Image (cartoon, rainbow, N blue to C red):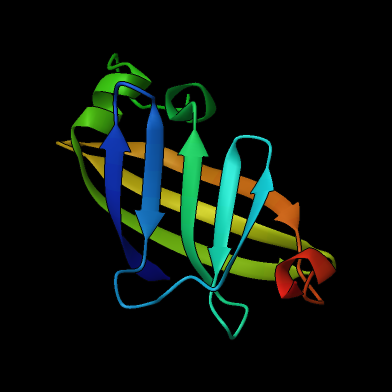
Length: 117
């Protein structure tokens, strides 16, 4: 599990999770997710658009948007299972933990011809 840095844009409801020590080489957009990979095809960042709608499993009576505004830490675990990349997000807000969020996205096996262009 890797600790990631984060930025939350409340005006646009976008959550950006990133490894500050890695650089993005290619991006893939799947719905409200943008996944960035380095040259070794390792996941280095995730942008979640409409984050408060996607991250609805918040413990307690706090809204998802308030929890995102009070975010203090983020860890990401990515695991390949056949043709799917399973991403577990562990987000912690002030005094509360946002329940683990699991995202399933297609696994990248070969570089896209569009990215090579």
